[in-house]
Image (cartoon, rainbow, N blue to C red; front, side, top):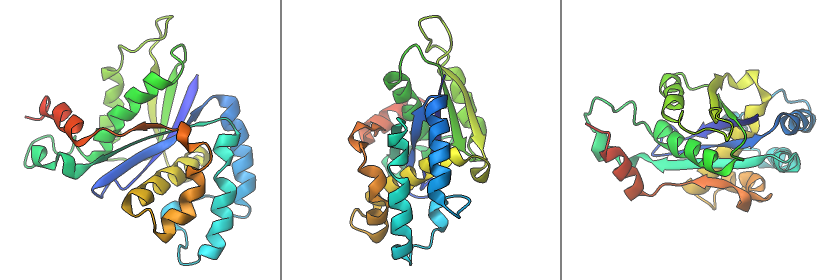
Length: 225
């Protein structure tokens, strides 16, 4: 059984990023120990509430945390879409909530994870809590029921949501999603530079789901009434 811990950044902006890491129980156990130690006196990492006006304090912390998921053998995974790529297709439509960018990004993320993870492994997703999207996200499991292991077991066993402070293992996902969103917004900004370490450690091995404008519009044109 593999588990992917994921978080998002920018779900109320034009571009949303869903990102995180996947691995087995041993890898996640090792990361939890290392992450807790690297946090020092901090209880948790919240990227949006960090004191960005004090970069001299943040740089050592972010640099210390960045390599840990990779050193524990976890694999990065992310998806990103822009609302402006398809907003004109859903204006005034009854399914506008269903096609919020978070959910539009989620499906290619799930499909790519199914493609890139070992086909004989089942996969559980754990997301940082998004109450507005949770019911829709869980429904996606039924759409993906046809994806099976060679022994006939359903590949994706569950999609769960957890409060940020209740599970330390979503914090690396928060870091990664925030870093990717900052790079898309402005690759030369202070925040992009401070977040850069988590995108430098074997990040070229990341599994990205970045559907083009044309791909998103084609997919939604089949479903939007």
